[in-house]
Length: 448
Image 1 (cartoon, helix red, strand yellow):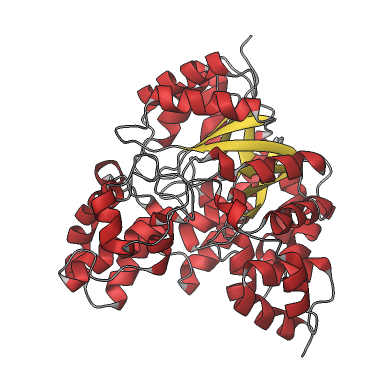
Image 2 (image 1 turned 90 degrees about the vertical axis):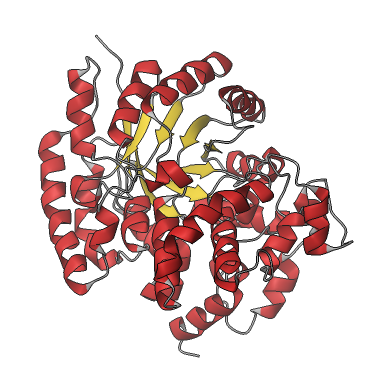
């Protein structure tokens, strides 16, 4: 008999984040929670990532209430969220006390597994999150942000996993946000990682470039324990491979799963109706359902491709699309080869767009890129050329230690700022992550 491969279902988080900018409403999935709970999943990824921001910015839903509602309807399945380490769910580093309080509240409101990653794979930005997750009793799953460059070798990731294991992670995920981990490279990578850790190993990829299912199969052959999939109506394209497809393939490979195909069929029927609704109203663009091999050429995540396309369309500069795509790898090289994942993907994409639209490289530079070059996001994978750095930030101080060391406790000040509106600790953290949007949301919620 083979091994039992576990599944994490992404339909309530990464699937709709990748396909339709995280716009799925609680009203549209609430009647599927019983089915999701009885399908045989290890975990249901249902919070974190962009869900928090989307709830308060676009859906007018309280993300904390959404989490509590989901948890109250699950008896057999763990809840899982994605957390950007010291960035939490925002786009900057937050003080340690804010990070710890957010994690404490996430767990007390219903989260069982927190997948923690850092966009630069700078483990110093993971310390507080791992410690707090374990302190408050959830599983600390630490993810490596997979990318390719002159330094991002199998040996690099193997050493990284050794360090993460020593830091106290409970499980490890390979996070391939762009769908660029090829099947044979996956086999090589997983085989090597298994030598350096005895922790459960989970593989996350996207079908963006058309290789996701094959990558999973080779990963399973090499020893992967858990895979991330999406129920078929919300799979494929920039989302994850199909849950039902992988269930069949893994069983035929001689391994086992805990999934119930009858329940999966009911889930697929339910979410097909949800998908058709979003297609009809235009929330789900059909472009996101197709495969785009440009991800292999330019190493650009699917969500970043769609954002660049939309951004250029708004500027009436779609004729510059290919030029911007070609500029992305050049900007990434200038910035020390950061993995293209939030918030780095937004920084690199915006800078590439500015470089092409203005006709002069680095004539316009966002403040976030300047902060990155000052060391405020962490250590770059490859040292940045000092002449280039000075051309952008002149003689500004560059920090080399843990960025959060330069942030003082933030909660007392935040509590004071939001005292007139906040009615719970969760309200305070909503404001802490997204001050202006968060306060506007709370004012609407409490009819101020």
